[in-house]
Amino acid sequence: MSLNIVLYQPEIPQNTGNIGRTCVLTNSKLHLIKPLGFSVEDKHLKRSGLDYWPLLNVKYYENFDEFYQMHKDKKIYLSTTKGGKFYHEVSYSMDDFIMFGRESSGVPKEVAQLFKENLIRIPMIETTERSLNLSNCVSIIAFEALRQLGFPNMK
Image (cartoon, rainbow, N blue to C red; front, top):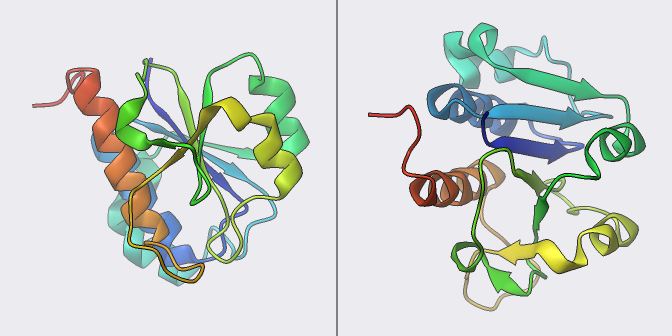
């Protein structure tokens, strides 16, 4: 059992590398929904993930439909600037999925609509469509979920 971090069509290899490193050190599984904006052989991905990438529990999906058909019966939270609840206002369970959209555009409206009851957000000042870095968002929310779960298998 582990927390599941989902990246919807990530575009920046450094972010995905950093997120992979976080997943390894928190015993979380990383789910990557294609198309990716880079190759997993990318030197920037490997540099930011350092030597953690071979230790990563990662699953690749050819597209969103493949991911959704496999996991639609699970609790899936979607982190978005349009979320109705703050990330700390929900009760996470082990094996929940927390999805994050593309760095440039999030997820399409039809994808967000599927998770309308589970839209979460990180509080930020009001600004014009700007948000925190993706790898920072993953860390903030993942560690809140893990805190609620008592930091399982972590010391």
